[in-house]
Each structure stands twice: as C-alpha cells, then as structure tokens.
Length: 163
Image (cartoon, rainbow, N blue to C red; front, top):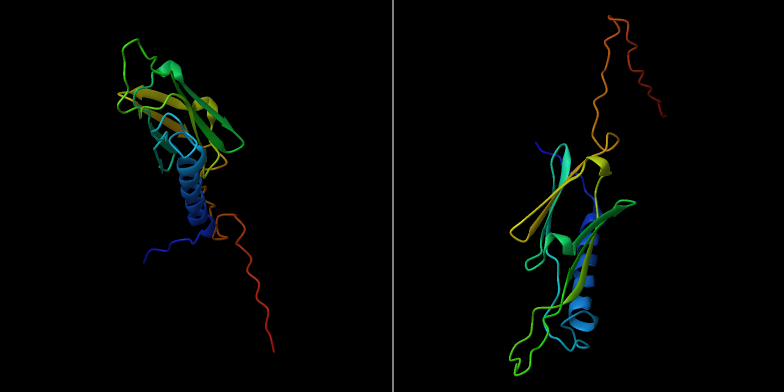
C-alpha cells in the first residue's frame, strides 16, 4: 500500500502560476492587449526531484548562453533570458512578427533547500539544464532504533488512560 501525503499548497501554487501566466499573456505581457509586437513570451520549464537533487530544464530557443542568467535567493530560482530585437531594414514589410525581443523571466519556488555552490548547469540546443544538489539539511535521514541490548536506549512510549 502506498501512502501519499496531501499537500494542498502544491496544487494552489500550480493554479497561481497558471493564473499569473494567463494574465500576463493576455493583458499586460508581450503579445497581450497592450503589446505592439505580437507574440507571447513564455519560458516553459520542467522541474523534477531525485533523491539527491532537483533538476530544472528550461526551453530557451534562439537564446545564446551569454543571454541567460540564473540566480537563487531564499528558496526561489530565477531564470532570465534576453534576446535582441530584429532590426528592420529598408524595404522590409513585416507580415508576421511573433518572435519576441527583450527580457523574459521565470521564477520557481523550489521544494527543498539546495547547495548552490555544488550546482551544475549545461546549455545545449536551446535547452538549459540545471542540476541542483539538495543541501544536507534537505535530504531525509534515518534514525536508528536501539533494542536496549546493545547499550542504546529504547524509545520511550507513553500512553494515557481516559475514563
């Protein structure tokens, strides 16, 4: 039998992220009602956890390694990608202009503390991959239970009788 822990805030954070993206894309963000350039700027990511690390993959096509910035502060990972605008040339007439220019930022609240000094990053074919080792405090630890015969104290259990 598998026990699953119920974490109501996890589902809420996913909903909050979706609503933030929706409002940014449809109202105020690039490609929204107030945008003159068209298109939508969004930084899609995958985040998964192994026993030893948290892995983040971000798809940033059309961006070079020099145009990426990654930072971590107080449990929040920030990814920032900057792309230059395509300059119009004399005689050009735009028919579709959806490739956004400027800066796109994505922040992720990580589920565990990480060891920033041991973090690894790679960038290949427009995919940024971050391997973020969990800090020693974030990894689960086992507690040995002695049986009393080998000199370890037995765990003390107490019960109260009602009635």
